[in-house]
Length: 74
Image (cartoon, rainbow, N blue to C red):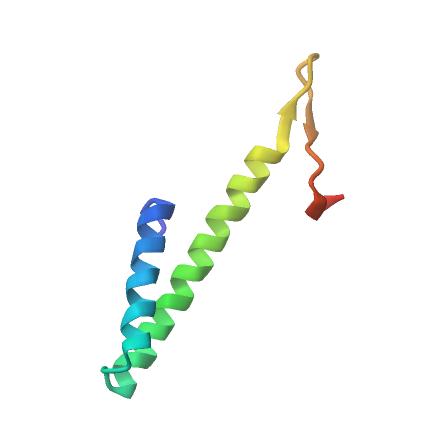
């Protein structure tokens, strides 16, 4: 799961959400799908956090790394 690209994970998550919203699967399958969706959410969140860390590092002219300030991390 973690080796998939972010976009692939999101597609998988959207598919599960549509299946759960349709409501035509039994309780046990719904619980399994919900559990799988929560795992996908965690992996996507981890990938986003990692990407944000990478983006927030900017090279200054002298080659040092500095944090890029955003509204969320001021």
